[in-house]
Amino acid sequence: MKPQSSHLLRRLVPLLLLPFSSLAGCGEGADPGLEPVVRDSAEVRIHEFPAGVLERPAAFQLAENPSVRIGVPEGAPEYQWTRPVAATRLPDGGFAVLEQAPAEVRVFDPSGQFVRRVGMEGDGPGELRSPVGLVALSGDTLLVWDRGSRRLTWFSIEGTMERERTLREPGEIQTIRRVALSPSGAVVLLGATTTAEDLANQGRVREAWQVVPLAPSGEPGSALGTVPGTERAIAVERSAGGEVVSVNVQGRWWWGEGFAWASGSGVWTADPLALEARHFDAGRGLNRIVRITAQDRSFTRALIDSLHGVELDRVADPEIRELWRADFEGREYPPGVPPVAAVFADAAGRVWIGLTEPPPERLPSGELPAVRRWVLFEEVATGSGGETKTLQFVGILALPPRSHPLWADTDGVLLVRNDMQFDVAYVEWYPYVDG
Image 1 (tube, rainbow, N blue to C red):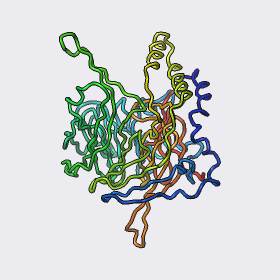
Image 2 (image 1 turned 90 degrees about the vertical axis):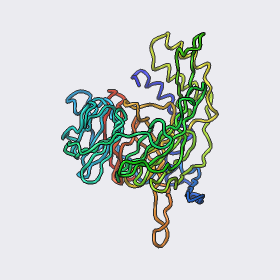
Image 3 (image 1 turned 30 degrees about the vertical axis):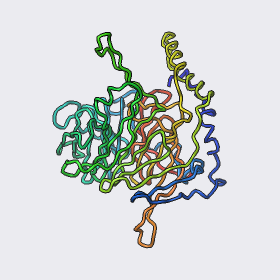
Image 4 (image 1 turned 120 degrees about the vertical axis):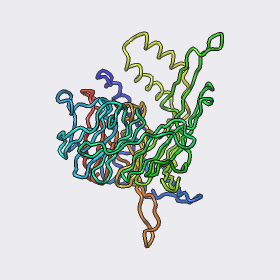
């Protein structure tokens, strides 16, 4: 966001956060009856939490300032970020961060000092083209998913390529959309089953994503299920002779989109249009659903006008501003604001559901949205022998503005944050403190 737009955002904050304005100071006086309604359906355990969970901060929050900050506005290139898209904490307390341009993994010690690069940009063995996924495995091994070359590559922490595997579309998947990498080494693919014939139809098209695990040998297993994917409007313009002149594919942030993040045993998925998350176990399929029964927030006229104002404030060209104003006239907003902005899972076994606060912002990578507030749930064992597991509400966790978590455990959160003053990206480690 440009500096001249900050005054507009300050005016918008009370309006955009109004539905959750009761968060401040509600830790002691909130309704304690936040236990879920739990039921089982075809081996799927469903946890339905009341809307009150959206008003209870977690007992822990982030420290006011990070204890480690990696990034500089100007300086050595190894500390400058263009598109950091993934990161992980290493067993020695250090950090590995995946940079997309140039494509490489950068390793830092626990204090944030640069140690080495792993991988390099290119198409050859051990090289990366457009990497988007990174996870630290046991034995000081880093696993990278490169969407550009469609390869999984295993590196030693010293930078040696150990092996690699090119992925093919398994099952009914036509195009791989997401690859979830688990610290256990499990890999789960999510891909569109939409065919070219389906996409040839004009109008709104919602992809269906199939969830498919990969065996350690690299062979795909049986599909675990299907989740809603990306929704787009496709307009095909043809000449008088019937030839295709142009194809316009357009999406809106309030339409459907698929989110996924690896857990310790599979993958959590979510959809912006439903305040819930679904877990697919890599061996058993769909086994857990967490849902919040809250009312939709309305797309009021005041909110719509504010969103238009934010968009116009981002451009200075008068002609473009007029084109955008004309686009505003033809827009159709849904009755309710999509409640979910992202899904995330941490190393402590918790699932995070990111809450939407319009207008949404993308971080410099374009891969991750900026999400300020998250509602957390953790899996706990119950029963005399701990044989039954249930989800327990943890609380609302607030992150810095224009940030997204990359890795977290019981000690803190490693996140990417876009600085508003210098418009540069930082990778930062925030320890937890008592809330």
